[in-house]
Length: 335
Image 1: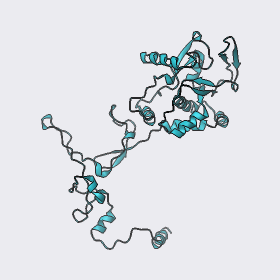
Image 2 (image 1 turned 45 degrees about the vertical axis):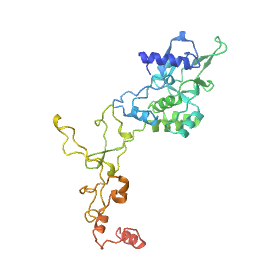
Image 3 (image 1 turned 120 degrees about the horizontal axis):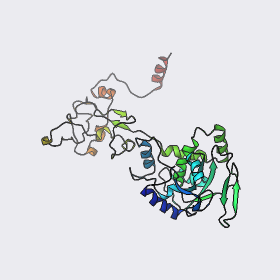
């Protein structure tokens, strides 16, 4: 989490200060701007995500279009003193949303739009803060400063304009820090059971589900990391495979001279089950074309080799249903 320095960051910082109920004071210590306060991202774009797949997943699960999500938003910027900023960047502490806000996001689904002016958070130490004291100025009397020592059990709840979505995303990474021991994780889960839901949401929102890619022959293959993809195109996860009956046939040649014009793409075609004696399969010649796919009925369904032989009049084929006798015969072959 680096202090913002770009022009976009400065504009977002100004909006964050207007939305912040503390008006730019340190979110944790409540000290004034004169105390070396810096604006900080609650959640920053992950380093090392060069292909952008994780960021695409975040946009997709958040319900926004590709390239629409920005982290330079007032909902993702809060204010900290420099020492707490350093500790936050090291993932030594985190903001834990309230159980109600977490459960509301779970019930609303990944594409939730839960929006309020402020939310409630818990200041949660994660690791290596046993020797650190935290101070907090009173809102009523600025000369009244309370001191809290680890594990800060009496530290008051924090009111902030930060959106829980960004806090959940950051908390998931902080909780996965290898420096955080299993014993500490177990103790935190025991004290704050909704942390398990936070982790579940974090994993769900950043999941990278691969949809199949489809080649010329209609055989699906899983795209590997780093596969060529237009930067302005739709991510693979949003492109579900087309049904066989709706696919376009690719031309035999993709290399044409400019004066030949664009190569023609044939319209969608549907395979007939009964055409040419019922011997056609999905790999056969597409001779029968329906003007309206609705008129095709069952004709566009893919058929198996058994069905082809049956349509050809092979009466030796029995029923394909599992009967008691067939199950016994099948089981006998296992021994």
